[in-house]
Image 1 (cartoon, rainbow over the protein chains, first blue to last red):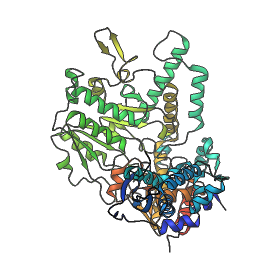
Image 2: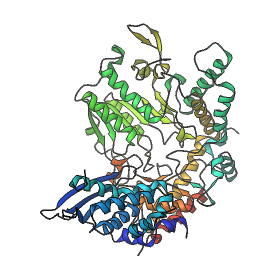
Image 3: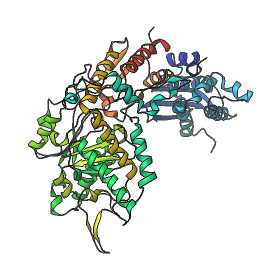
Image 4: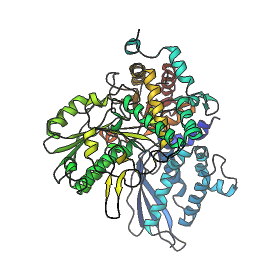
Length: 159
Length: 433
């Protein structure tokens, strides 16, 4: 597989064409809501992301993620894959996934070696090829930055 | 025969081969051994050996502080530095003392904007009256400007109470002159515009804009970054008051550029950056300033880079700018044919008239970043994004475009390789289905 094909894996192309979570959704009463707008100033890519967090005895849980945005296939697919990955997960788990994904993006194309991290990231490991291209890493991280900021704004992150 | 340079249509195959052999970087490969097709010269040009050698030679043989020191090296360094000024001035049709070295074109435009601001704050005495702005005065730009010829004027307006106005852009990507008399009025003090758009490649109607500015006594500032490397430019003939251009886009080094100012304007203009080398008499109470261009060259200048820029100007001058421009026209005619590829839309003039070989485009269903990535995989270097011209992209309803731009060393075969690769982009992303 060429470096280009490693970058544009089928799962990325599919998510870019049919993104998950597109269209901002209302957050039900009693849930925590947070919203964030992130811009990549070099290319003008934008995402506005809203998180719906359900408080609970076992800690807050991401009930839903919805977003609007425009940008390259990498930024759109990454936000879409992330939406699938984090929906229904505890906020603590989401923070761990975020750390794994950042590690993956810093791996310069080598990927992660920890089985646990690879299992947890699932489809998001398809972005390994992107980490070979320094200029595109921030495309893959745009949605994740919006998610983290949304969670902070919702008040769901442990102080 | 001495007139062949003026009439020949461009560069012959052997001339172009000789030109390319002068640029070491063009010989390298990228992305796993593919030959480089460099189509990003509007961002920065590659450098010929003579420029690289001039910088090395300066450091190896002549390096010294200029305009001071009583030793031979200082003399030789000063001679090289001032010789470069003379070469650049001759290249753009200016007098030598009308060229101010700057760190680049952005710095050159900011220099003019800050000089207006300083004059408005009362600096420069009676001579600087023509640079003083009052609330309600207007500064005119165009919607096609590079941020470097827009943001400094926004900031000047914010500091002085002047009002920014602008000429729009037509659907064809040309500066819209239909309301010229409404935009450039008795209140207009500055008209700043790009000679050639770094996005659309369109050549601005300089004569009309200069005439309109003159009718109302406004000062003209020309961003000549894209024109100076690719067209014969005679600033005296164009009649602009100021012009800015950078070394690195005209085959010279980074870190150096030039501001042209009409002599009487530079003489009347208060300094901006102050310090060493730009003064006459300094006491603890007050300072008097050197005449231009030194007045605007405080501190140690990028001397080796200026020398390199001078050599670049000479190299282009010897090749002949008429021939360079003809070559550019031929490349532009090839580049605009990408509009025939299904799903490809060119932003800007669709024809090859009054334009340079700078073509920005969008591909239906594929983001510019992704277009650039696929081309890069084939060894083809293009720029993606808004090219420091967000308002112009907004005007055309797009956040980003991809841009291919040529230079004197670009070949028709390279454009053909680009066109072929571009033809496969939509299929790669399944956007053609």
